[in-house]
Image (cartoon, rainbow, N blue to C red; front, side, top):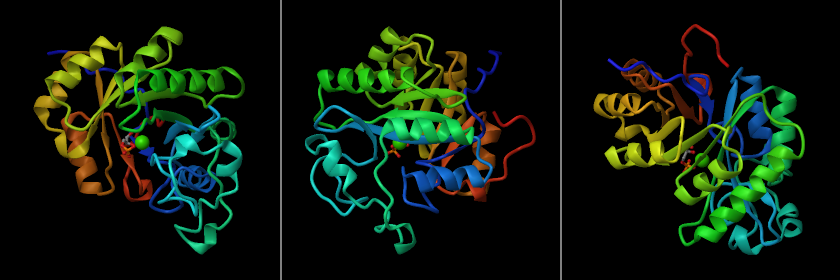
Length: 254
Ligand code: G3P
Ligand code: CA
C-alpha cells in the first residue's frame, strides 16, 4: 500500500478568492476569503499586450469587466481603467483587475497561501506559455510572496518552463479528466499534485495518483456532502467558490 503524498495545501482552497461571495480574482475576493478563515486561495494569471501578468480568468475581458476583447491584446493601462466589480454587484463597483504583483502583495499581507494558475487561451502556443511562466516567476522573485505557493496549469509547456527556472516551486498539473495519461504527464513534469475536475474523481484515480506520488486536488466543490465524500476518497483539498459552506476537518490548516 503506497503512502499518501503530503498535500501541498489546506483542505479548502478559496477558488479565485471566494468567487461565490465577491467578484472573482479581485482584491475584494481575496479579502473575503481571508475573513472566512481560509488559509489558501487560487487565482488565474494571464499576460497583457505589454507582457505584464494580471489576475483574471477568461481570455477576454467581457464577462468580468465592463470592457471587451482579449486580455492578450489589451495594455495594462487599458485594463486598469476597467471596472471588475459591478458585473458581480453594485457593492463591488470600482474593483480593478489586479496585477499579479498586487495579488502577491495582498496574499502575503493577509497570510494567505496561493495556488497560482498559469492560464492560457486555447490558441496560445509554447512561446506564450514560456512568456507567461517567465513573467510570473519574475514577479515571484521580485517582492513579497505568500507563505506557501503551488503553481498549476492545464498547459504542459508552462509547467515545464517553471520546472526549469524554479525547480523547487511546487507544481500541479491541471486535468479535466484525470486519467492514466494525466497521471503520467504530472509525474513527467515533476508535479506534486494532480488538480482534477471533481466529477472525474473516483477511488481508482486517487489510488493511481497516490501510487505515483501525487496528491489529488479537486475543483470546484461547494457542497459539504460532496466535500466529505471526496475527502473520504483521499482527495487532499478542494477548490471552492463558497468555502464558508465546507466544514474543514480538524487539524493544521496550512
Ligand atoms: O485550479 C482549479 C480551477 O480553477 C481550474 O479551472 O476554469 O476554474 O480555472 P478554472
Ligand atoms: Ca483557475
